[in-house]
Figure 1 (cartoon, rainbow, N blue to C red):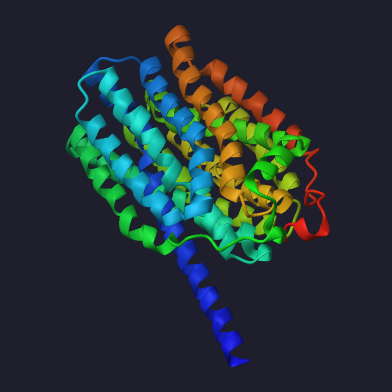
Figure 2 (tube, rainbow, N blue to C red):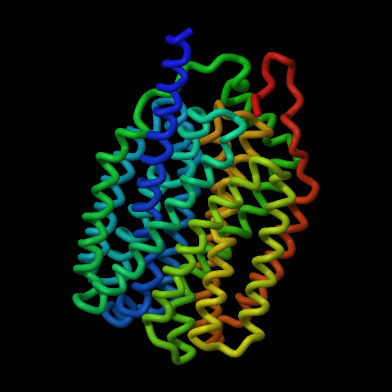
Length: 410
């Protein structure tokens, strides 16, 4: 009896170590990434590139991030998240160093776009949440996802103001060198999520090929993808262009940096609370509500006269809604399809997110260069929020119908 209790306690400690290490990995990787919008103006002025070009670099980063994610996720499902995180951190650091040495748009695309985009697939949510999902009991899974997701917001809250301070005191090249040093800290943290995943039996889900086929035939899978596409569009547009939008309207750079930091601060609570609510209530209903509230927040931001106060209120509201989609969406995928291939299936859903992010970052720059304004993109963002809210309502949350031996636990 005592042995069983000890084993359960050890498993519990192992799960918490994985959750905390995963949260810290995401803190660093996402914190650095969320600061990229601060570099739009200084890099654009120094390298003489327009916003469309900078937006295309960030868009390419997002698209590559998504395209490779299902493959990296499947690799992590098979060989473990630790190895993947180490490889991702090394490539991430190399990308930042190359970007810091760039002399033109090509060098920026190679470092900031290609290498950083490929690296992110190994050090962010999909790989980490796949490992956590297998280590945590089903009833606590969405809450654990929320805790890890909150790590990304903590990074945004801490790293973005630090990056702005470095940009003010030094320059953008030295700031990128410093951020590469932060990314290197992911390597020792990868030990916390290391280890080959346990051997799965039939109750954990079917083999990967069958799991992909049955998800592809399931309408709810594509509705989830559609909603997450909108999430990516919103995040990339706001994260990349909000600081420049604020400067264009005559407010200081510190207001833009403060807005990104406040988004991160409020998303710490938002990610945790949406994750906690998802453990008790309908995940699809919460997703529909979250997307609808995003549309309302954007509309009010545009209606109210712009001021430092209105920017910070918008940042707080949007921050509460920022990444709450991640624990809910990942939890929904695990609930319906099981956790055996959570990183692989979650990687496909994340690809839709990154396609949206590609369009959000690029088309915003394209629209600005063509019209001198972001007004069209703000309007599109409101329409997409309504579409995502409606898309989640028909999702069937019940585990996918399989023979009894193949039902996922949730």
